[in-house]
Length: 253
Image (tube, rainbow, N blue to C red; front, side):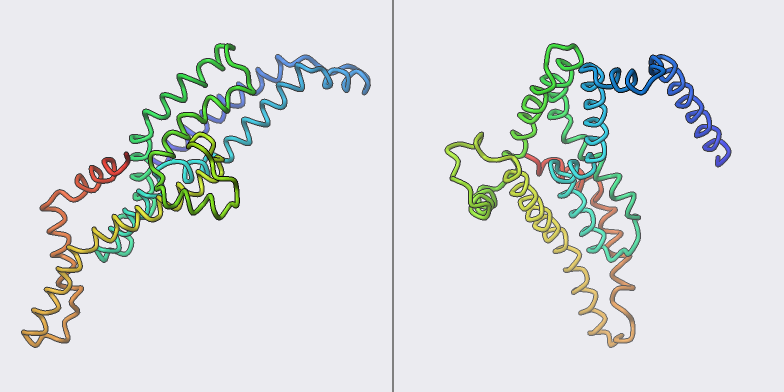
């Protein structure tokens, strides 16, 4: 298996190297003099291509932050982490499994918004029917609509007061940074509320096991040793992972 991964990685590297070599060969050589090189770089078409490449690389580096701040990923990670705490499981499932599950559910929930962004902004830009300065306003409309649906009015009003900005007349006039801040606060609150509700049945099991052990005089037996298999059995019997996934998806309006 390890050899297969290494062969795949080497093959991918060779393909990428060949692609870069072909692109480099397609670029015309610079002039023999420094003045000619500077003149070729200073062409408006070249400058626009360079700026677009820099913008793409910057956007790629900001993808993780954008994913956390403008999607329901934050809510899903909090709920799954609190679920593991309620089950009294330290590292099962591992962190990367919970993050992967939250990421899959996030893409599942955000699919309509992503498709709308692709239709109204990405495809027109690729077909040269949308200018670069119009791309961001068009793409932000579906994102703003999603953020407004998930943001609580109390958090939005609090964020507007905290920013000390004029009260917007409608939702479209809310600054984007204010909206993102209110959305993150709303997601934190919603995630902890859902996690608290998940804690209750497992807390009842812990209290019941502790009471039974105390009544039997088995005070030297750790309650967690008896409660853990009972909580896992309950979680399996009610098909807990399916219920958690369904509840997380349905919690997004």
